[in-house]
Length: 387
Image 1 (cartoon, rainbow, N blue to C red):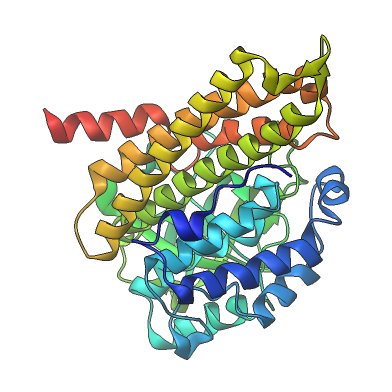
Image 2: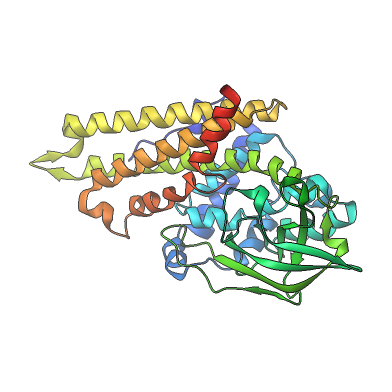
């Protein structure tokens, strides 16, 4: 039996019995509803839409959201625990697809009216609708302040023109939380609109083919004189950049958690394999080079996990962690890169085969230092705050 990091017991400073109950519930869901089919879903490039409803019915989708909209409120570590257990699907694509609501809904929750919250949040938490966030454009990724998609007011509608790309859940989303330009250049001319499926002038590409995250559908979105009701404006016109920025801190934390957990699973798989695989008459664990490689991998993951948890605790306490969460994301992604690389190396040729989990973990981990703000952008944020 492979050694498994005991998150619940190792980090009792952060997790209570209530967190462990959530963790157990999601772990059972993943074991029953996801793991038996995840290889098939990876090859298909998506997982069944029915999984959203199943997850909604047992409260997974609503973790961290207010009860009045169908959520299950709790502190920040309920979300951390949920993200870790969803990662046990062994598929970053499944994690991204089932969790796209966690980046699509917060701007609505933070800036929307009561009517908008009931309309755009409640059905998604119930698993009846799928939500996506659309910020990135073909001509610019992390440079959010210079986005080009325009929305021009025309009576009781906005006329939207432009496009978005790399949108997780974009192919089958029922609603898209979309950043548009309603004013002049720069951050102060950006607004947020919810654009619903079937809106005239709104079209979606076929699924984009990716290196990793296969189980999530990723799309380009096109807006050709797309008519969006003014009532779908979230917050005040030209004040949307704030809603996007407060979203990023939680997204970067979630990606750090994902990177740490991806690396953790890679170690567990490596230990299991190293104990069973024999070379030159003894198991791989009989070689010092393998034991020390595993020791270094475990040390990096423990250190990164502890740092991420401390940042999460401070965010939960209301302490500004813009610099620290950028550091945590970068560190976790670099640890994930190192550990998944070493895991494939331990597996040798088998680590390059798609039927082995570490192959998928290595592919899926690569996007984490790009999504939610690249490593280079994180370093720019950090440098501005320390210099």
